[in-house]
Length: 128
Image (cartoon, rainbow, N blue to C red; front, side, top):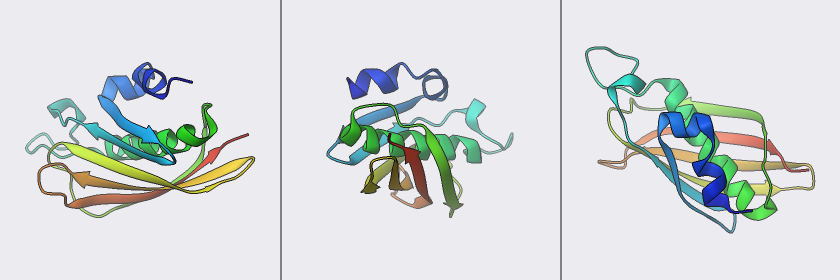
């Protein structure tokens, strides 16, 4: 499976502008350029929680896809929002466990301009 092509052609991630920049050996990274239409606040640019969640979910899935070489539907994801994302975001994900049927991935989302931790998440994905 061509991981880059798979994530480049994912309609929802493409709509939001999620770009998976690296995915190999159980690790993935991705970016999202913040835009006004992704903000929850009309007066100030602030990433909607769903935007941050989608970045985390997509990059988390990419980390696991790099090991199992097939799509991995999300079973569950828990996210803690720690700070407002007021600009571009990036995420880093690492596989914690890759089992026959289920995989677990930890994901951190950061502000691209100053590396502030915006959110941390743990995703559970179907691997088999």
